[in-house]
Each structure stands twice: as structure tokens, then as C-alpha cells.
Amino acid sequence: MNKVWYERSTNSGQTWEIMNGGKPIYSGIATHPSIDFYPGTNDIIIVYNRDESVIAAQYYENGIFKCESIVADNSIWDQVTPDSKPVIA
Image 1 (cartoon, rainbow, N blue to C red):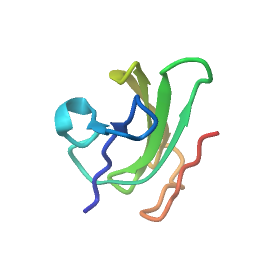
Image 2 (image 1 turned 60 degrees about the vertical axis):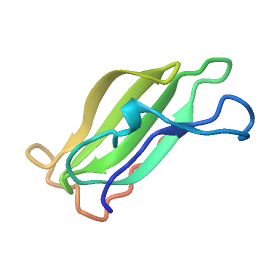
Image 3 (image 1 turned 180 degrees about the vertical axis):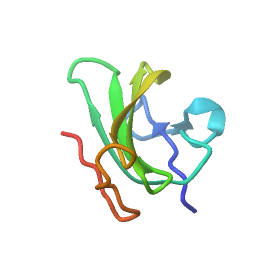
């Protein structure tokens, strides 16, 4: 499918909601997501392989998108491949 969705539950998994208006977090090719949260908050970061040549990180507060940063880009480092699997912890 080459898409990444952000889905969350606020009631211990009884119900789930697809965030971002029900759309993938990126409209192009997005693969290999990793997600982490800030303890004591509803803030999360999702990192993923974007267009097979960029590693991007998206920050959400309370389920609302706030910003995206490029973590690695082939135009600079030439190290991102279609199989690159970013990790955040």
C-alpha cells in the first residue's frame, strides 16, 4: 500500500480513530513507520521513509499535526534507500 496512517485510541483500545482527517500522513510513498510518545502527554512523533529517499519526522500534539522535519535526505547524505527503516525511541 505504501501509505502510513496515524490511528489512536483514547480509551484503552475499546475504540479507534484514524487521525489526519482519515487520510494517510503523507500523500506520496510512505513506508517503515516508527512511533514514540512523550510520557505524561498526548504528544507523539512518527518517523517514516518518504518517497524512498527521505526520512521524515512528524510531531503531533493531542492528535493534531504540528510540524514535519526532514531527518535524512539523499540530496545531502545519499544513504536513504527504499528499505531504510527509521527508528525513534
